[in-house]
Amino acid sequence: MRMAVVDAGSKTVRLFVADVGRHGLSPVHTVKWRLRLAEHVARDGTMSRAGMGQLAHATAAACRKSRRWGVREPIVFATAVVRDAPNRPRILEVIGAGCDVPVHLLPGERESELTYLAARRWTGRQAGPLAVLDIGGGSFEVAYGDGRTADIAVSLPLGAGRLTREHFAGQDPPSPSQVKDLRRYVRGQLAEVSAQVRDAGPRTVVATSRTFDQLSRLCSPDGDGGTPGARRLHQTPLRRAIKRLRRLPAADRARLPGVSAARSAQSLAGAIVAETAMRTMEVDPVLICPWAIREGVLLQAFESPDRTSRALPTG
Image 1 (cartoon, rainbow, N blue to C red):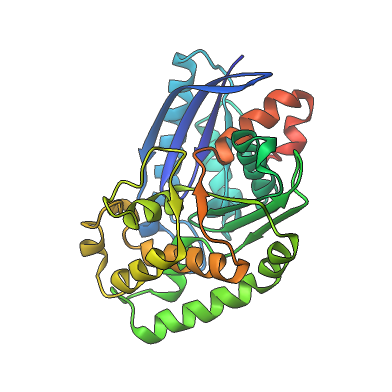
Image 2: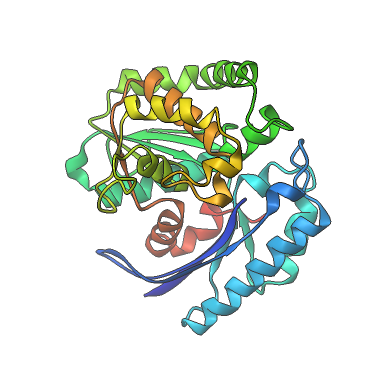
């Protein structure tokens, strides 16, 4: 069955088209529209009219392209950048005006559950007890389970973009005291779920998202990190990378292996979250998983089509 999902995020709007069946999914086409929402989101998360326009334009374009690939009703969803915005109803109204399909707004815990579903399908049952880490722009999802569904699904306000905006505003690079304060804040936010993961003792730990993927490239000796699906991120090189990142302004970070210009400003905050999570959860290394929320949404919709609206609530 040909299906498509449109993921409206803080850095990109991405269309993902796949053939989905009982044995999994096969990617058919993916395309993304880069956004500059960081310039249009206030410190409290309010999105400006210009930011809403960017998001709506890209989402409408993704829906049109989806139809060219044979999917008339793509599943459109938004995560933390919209979910946590004080003017969320207006954002959803503006996005919805350009689409002929509902816009789903994922609660953080549901996002964590669906990412776990995708990672479990990718790793398979042989992975045993599985923990999943996912750093987004606005939130950090952690999930754990020993079966098809997650037993623990948590979403924390530790997205790389959010932390950069809230803790490093106006400083590039941030001061040592700002970095120290962020580390303390992240440790506090992670304390409870880190203890849960340690107690559970996962056999396999995977990390999804562009943040983890880029960190694995940055920490690789050749700047590549190996074949997709086989990259690993270790604590020791990650700590060395943080020391390097914290001394550089964003423009210079973008010249490092694996760090994109679009994410260079938030790369330090993302690295601090990743290292703190791995250290406090006592996991080393983590395996970089190429499947995440988009695959989870499609698998859930295929397997439970009559429950899609409940699984992906509209705004």
